[in-house]
Image (cartoon, rainbow, N blue to C red; front, side, top):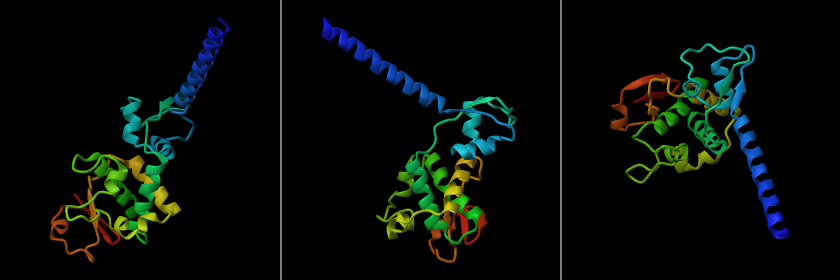
Length: 198
């Protein structure tokens, strides 16, 4: 009888702890709008796209009000953001800030496209048909370098902008590329030394 009583008490305590943890996790996914907030600021601060923020909260406009409660949708993990920032740092070092955002956007566009793997890691580590890697920093090891603050900021901006661009899936430096296939793609924009294409 004492054993059964201890088991019931232990089970109740464990269930209470799980409920508290679940409520804490649920609470961390909501946000109360403050004066001066915009959907862009909230999305950037929480590493989510404006589009997904609007969708989850059934927002049809960009108008929000102080005191309004917003649910923050799931986003990339810290490890995914770090990997994305490292590829941006390696691929766009020395390029304008807008070019860094565009490189991160290409990776996110690939994640969202049915033509590519559906994770950041899958896209960045994708092998080409000839056995190489889609991104040269993976092949040459520069992907292992820590990202700088500019690359990290560019990733946050690209995540917030996700789904609103021109659909670029590729980028290349025309001065360094002789690949006829990539040169035949429709160019969406040119930033710095990179052409972005789809």
